[in-house]
Amino acid sequence: MEILEKNDTNLRIIVRDADVPLMNALRRLALAEVPCMAIEEVVMIENSSILQDEIIAHRLGLTPLKTDLDAYNLPEECECQSEFGCPSCRVTLTLDAEAKEGTRTVYSGEIISENPEIIPVSDKIPIIKLAKSQKLKLEAYASLGRGKTHAKWQPVSMCAYKYYPKITTPTEKCPECQKCVDICPKKVYSIKDEKVDVRDLLACNLCMDCIEACPQKPSKLKVEWEKNAFVMNIESTGALPPERVLVESTKLLDKQLKEFEEQVKAEPQ
Ligand SMILES: [Zn+2]
View 1 (tube, rainbow, N blue to C red):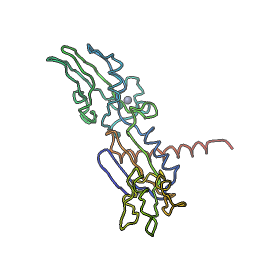
View 2: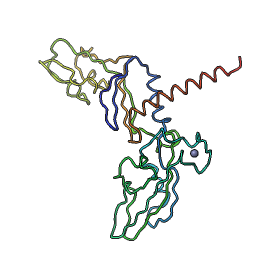
View 3: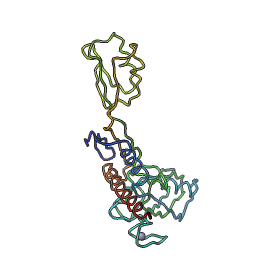
């Protein structure tokens, strides 16, 4: 593996010696199985705004929360087995907002959490607009969950991979058409010493527009992909660091394969 880009929310890596089933399994696990925190239940104490309780609850649910995977259990795996949850599987958050002076927007930063580690990823997410003297007071309960149950529990906003591109440019000078350079939507090519040159190989998404645009048939330009190498991009919602999402995906894959093995063994002959 080679890291191309890494920051708080984005991870771009090259993975070699892998195959499509593995890459796709990791992608699907990141989207549907890696847990993260989201608000699941809301108790409205007062709502004199124009939005219905359900819409506010929905907006709160979709507000990404910073997640501490090591400190909390999934409700279905928690020892308490209680419908109400316990401190190991539930976080209580409160919101008490009022528009005293005039119309104002209530932002996610006003949500107060009992655990300072489990707070909205950004404090600038608008929850609701209140007109003068309108009030919103509520208690919300967040828990871990999985993306396959509801998209609010998806720790990634994007998780995708593509084949590692392999481009062979013509060795001799082309007739001066530059059509491949101009048509490429990702600006992969440039002209260097009157020859087509690859400027940014990894930008190529194998659309083959350059081959089609080439007046020479067959084209001297060759676009292929490496069979066992991939470029993977993981963009986190901010709930978990993107590298943690990938690590959790591999752990889950390992766990699922072991379970599968156990079940195969348990089948009577
Ligand atoms: Zn519990």
